[in-house]
Length: 52
Image (cartoon, rainbow, N blue to C red; front, side, top):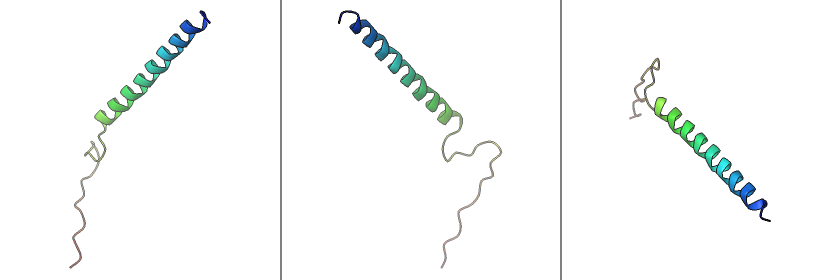
């Protein structure tokens, strides 16, 4: 049991580290290319006119 506790702690540390890396990568990707934003090279289109 005494050997199991450090292994569990190391596994938890690795899990949270990998999770933080994944969330950071997702945040950086959304910062570089925001959803719905006008990225370079995209054409901005006007919304269709309402039918009257």
